Image 1 (cartoon, one colour):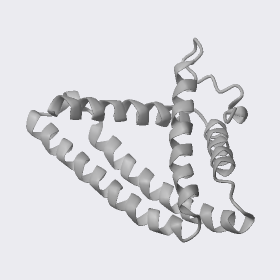
Image 2 (cartoon, helix red, strand yellow; image 1 turned 180 degrees about the horizontal axis):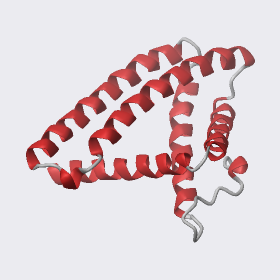
Image 3 (cartoon, one colour; image 1 turned 90 degrees about the vertical axis):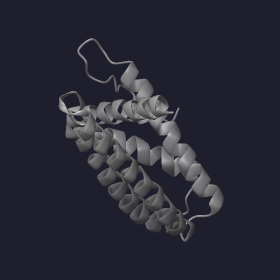
Length: 159
């Protein structure tokens, strides 16, 4: 059980570090990634213009809060090799606490989203986010020889 938990945490580290590193390469890449994500979500949710105005305000707040929690996790995950077993255990406990906060936050925002969009659109949002992460990971896996992400055609990510 502990091994599965550790594997899950390490996978989370890999994903967050890869995306974070990719975004750190430049504002332009980050902007292109965000634009592609917005495009995919907009397409998948089929928002009306009125829904769109309200949805993006809620979604941006949600994303900001989730990213804050992910940042806390990344900070705890730094330097694992240089920490004592006791410190690692404490950090792992803190990471689980942060993940619990994520769940509470997701429940809160589920209610906020349902004030703006219907339940089918909300399900489509979750599916679109998952699809986007999978596509982004696929792009990262196809890095060129220089170690940079191959983001040619990122504008066409929803193909």
